[in-house]
Length: 334
Ligand SMILES: [Zn+2]
Ligand SMILES: [Zn+2]
View 1 (tube, rainbow, N blue to C red):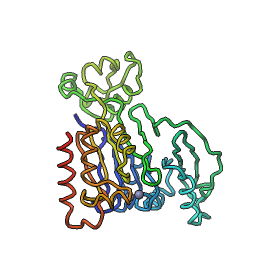
View 2: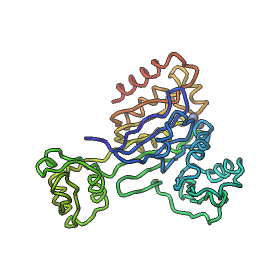
View 3: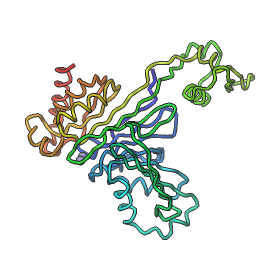
View 4: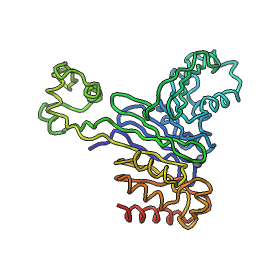
């Protein structure tokens, strides 16, 4: 199976946290957290359409400026989601610059900011053409755990405790469409952009009798198939991919329970591990996890694969101890 999402941590484990999630064969990506993103190439940053911020401690939000600077002057709507107080946080950042020339750009950037509260979200638009002053009313929606929804996938959030609210984040594909190479061969078809349209049609639950056009090389040109018929010959549907990102959380009963439920059966769990278990009192005071706790949570959630990050600088040159401790706990609890 070729996964649809290809998540990677943006920085080394001692640097700012953040997860970059590009989509297979598409020029688009999600990003979880906006810490220092200087190490991301501009071509990757330009793929970002939706950003999700766990909380606004500096190491998770200082990259907002960098992102904004690169996208300024482009025809784009950037959606950013964040915890309680997020509209004020973003407005504070925007108020830090002069925008007297912003209405002159040919291509207007629009920021669509969503603040997440435990039971509702508040969404507000900030347009470059309006010098980022919020001209439209904020819109309120109920919040039931799903932050963002498309036919192919959803992004969910859970409220966790880090002395302030901190969002756990997860992206889940609704189902996965595997293309059967043998099936393509039998129909004499070659992969191309039509495959993305074909998959999208399946996600959109389009009528199986609907016709889909397939580009073929050479003389045959475009061929029409009934969607259901084609799917029966070239596609196999399996469970969707799930990626979960947990950072900046205290090891409390409530958090533990919520994290295990939220991350349940993740294909890949990214979980913070700033401290060693021998320093768990410090970890607790700072409202963070130890590597042992991270490994235990990954195992209890049944994560198939997990990665740790957000290491405290006190362990410089001892990072192998953090990895070993987390892996040992994962094996102990699996
Ligand atoms: Zn942090
Ligand atoms: Zn923090």
